[in-house]
Length: 320
Ligand code: XMP
View 1 (tube, rainbow, N blue to C red):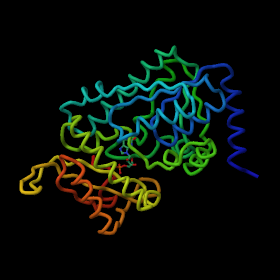
View 2 (view 1 turned 30 degrees about the vertical axis):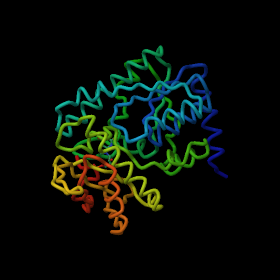
View 3 (view 1 turned 90 degrees about the horizontal axis):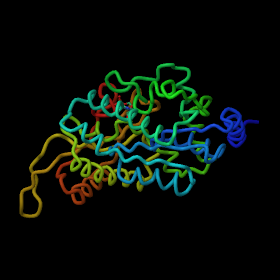
View 4 (view 1 turned 180 degrees about the horizontal axis):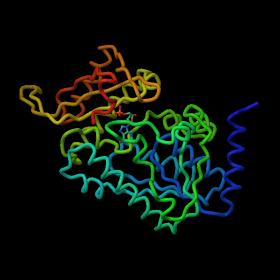
């Protein structure tokens, strides 16, 4: 009978057979699919694998550090952590249009990935976390205004340009099976059970305004508090995605005896099965009150918090 342990052994044998003594390169995003691909291929071929993590500076608090500590320190995987935040934030300066942000980030991502791939001397194979649903729907589903969900991690024409073959060991699996395989490989629960996170990262959670390091700092802090409270309340796994949006408006508040004039942010949490439709999560008010108190007390720069009760449709999950 079929077990994940047996699948893992078969997948490892197949990878060894396909790759031989060749070199494999794998783009890590911090997400479930690429993490599982990396851990699986590493178990199959060890140091023939190099992972490249392109850090665009738009990840959440502590996320990049977690990727490095899990893959480099714990799994001993050859990992290139490319901090490209100056490049990304420089190119995004002054940009407010959502589609332009996505195109800019997606294009830069491919450029930086290719540069790093060349720097390590290239590879014979490119590993990808293609899942069964991606295989059957040749075009993966559409998210946001005319955007393919995985646009950002899809490294486009790179395999052809660099003359690499593809290794796609998850092609037969559904998402829940990928998670089970990840656990089988010893990946930490918080990585295997992680909510989806968009490729353009926090850039699309600072809507309608210029992205700056200051705003990113404020947003990261508020978002970390929100997620921590969700985890502590035992609600993380009941929610499809939860995040904070930094709004392009300052509002008046009172802090002690003085007037404050700071940003407002919105909290979002939805349930969904595939991201195509979604319902807002019905938190109880005591929970929300606690989160709001913490954010306003602990995040300098935010003095007002709202909760988004829009479902999809008519809204989208992200704000832009
Ligand atoms: P929307 O906002 O369209 O999002 O309801 C549906 C799902 O897609 C994610 N999303 C993206 N993922 N690049 C990505 O990799 C993107 O540009 C992008 N836009 C939205 C969103 O987080 C949700 O899971």
